[in-house]
Length: 287
Image (cartoon, rainbow, N blue to C red; front, side, top):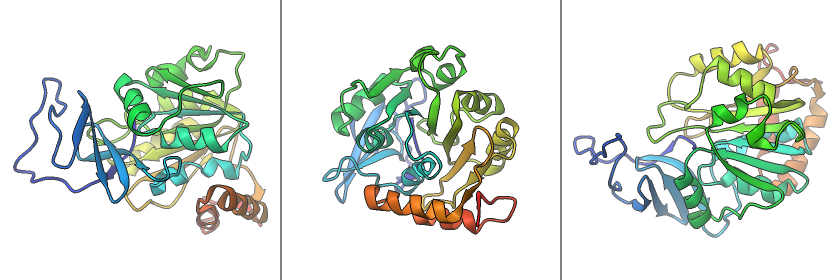
C-alpha cells in the first residue's frame, strides 16, 4: 500500500461513517467505491486511488497511464543513478501500480517483484490503473511485506536461487497514512539483507516526524543512507545503500541523470544537484 499525497479534507465536523474495523464504509465526497475498502476519484485528467479516506494512495494520468505523476514517485527512481541496469527490482506496496508499471515498461532487463498484502488493491490496480497482467518479468505477490523480506530463503521472491534486489522500493501506508506500516530497525535490517551487494533501497517517508524513521534506518544501515529534498506533498525519499554510499564522480552522476531525463523524462539532475549541495557528511559523491 502506498503514499501520502492528500486531497482536500471534507468538513471535519461531519466525519464519514465507519465500518466495524474502523475503515470508512462509504465513499467520501468526490469518490466512488469500487470494492469494500477501495475508492477512486478523478480530477483534471488524473485518476486517484484511495483506501476510503482523503489520503491519495496512488495516481494515474488517464491519457498517459505509464507515466509517474507524483513527485515523490519520480524520486523513488533515484536508485537508477547508482545501479543503472538492475536485474531484480523488488517493490513493497503496490498502490495504484505506478512504479510497477514504470519499471516493467522502462527497465526491460529487470524482473519486477511486487509485494502487496491486499487482494483488493491488486484487483483495483489491474482494473482501474492499467497494471499489466503478470508475466515472466512481472510478479505480483499477495503477502505481508515484513514476512516477504524476513524470510532468509526468499520464498515469496523467487527463492534462494533468484537474485537479490538491486533496487528495493518501499512504500507502505494504510488508509490513515499516519506513518509507514513498518518503520523499525528490525524491518529495515531485513530490507538491507535483501539487497544485492551494490543494491539501493528507496524508502518513502510521510506522516509522523522524520526523526524516528531516520533513527531506525540508521540502526539498520549505519550512515549508509541519504535523503532527497522534501517533495511538494511532504514526502521524503531516503536512499539506503547495502554496502556504503557509492563514491562516484559527480560528472558521472550528471551523465547518468541526463540519460534518465532523456529516456524517462524524470528530473534526475535535480536529484544530483540536491545531493551535491548536501553537507560533507551527507554528500554522495566526489568531484
